[in-house]
Image (cartoon, rainbow, N blue to C red; front, side, top):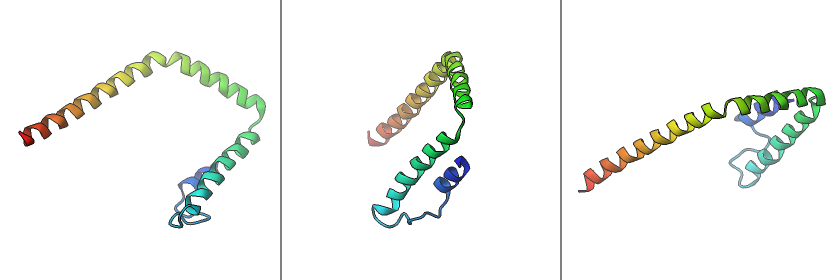
Length: 93
């Protein structure tokens, strides 16, 4: 079921084509969440609980690494935006 939902979400072929105003996107907003909900209901409770515990353990152990990666990304964006701003000011002045 999960594979069907992913295939539908990524497929260029829709039930209602996207170029039709409102309805084109409305089918995606309804069918994809409904498919995800059905796929989640098909997962046995024991497996879901095991996966939740594993995800929680992984999240707790990776927080310092995630913070360091976040800082690096923010610093890179600041440097890039600063460089772009400097080049724009150099052109203007």
